Length: 331
Image (cartoon, rainbow, N blue to C red; front, side, top):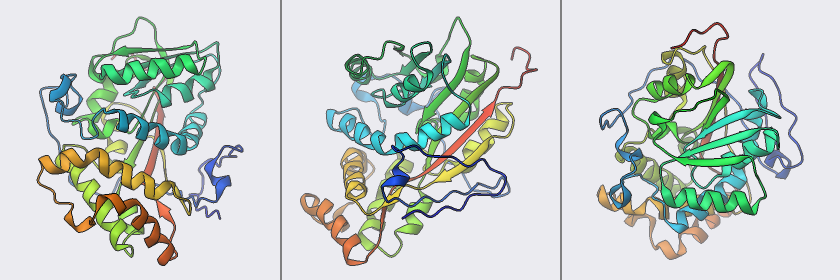
């Protein structure tokens, strides 16, 4: 089943066979309004977010970097990549381009971009976690991609001797206390006419969609609260819109997509994410007793969907991209 509600005047897409929309999912597309207003919680640590500093085992990054979390990211990426690919194609990314991927993690977005730019292009991934970089390099080698390199750095300290055609990232700006400042810095690495494109999460639609699903609602609310307590921004649509303008860039093209469907991915996604954030839940004294036995949680999430004849869902994906003005002077 496919449901689309595309705002007039926005370009439509023609998904290829790998698109999840061909696999029974429901897609909603809408826009954010700059007229809305909501508070944004920030945690500052100098000019770099506390959770993004390469500080070894003392890092408070909400998701951690365990082997289990790396596997979770890979499973999640397999579902989200077609959405991110549409964003990148819409922003004009293609063969021969040089692209910077920030917050590369275990390399999924970098590898997606590498396939778009082809062997004549180049991808540079930036990641602060050493273990994640090692995993990303191994996966790139296994995939036979020779146009991808990774470097260890904080996103606010990236330098390059040659300009990039684009800077991209997925689910990374949510962890930065000043996304506009980072985007302003990154835009200096992009050639005039080049692109900044980001996919960021919003949890509010999932809370609305699961309001009639008691267990799903409890899980989603607890995960969102854990992100917020750890300093992350759980609803990025307005932050993202404002960040582009505050960074001196034109107002971005934006849309929101919500992966939905009837298969078991969604219950697994919620369960896996709860497992990853559970240490932070405990640190912030957030109780998960209302969820019952963790050993049966995934099965009960699936059962609730069946019992109430409801589709599963995950976070809304807010896509945004804008071009560096061709007339921009060095900033």
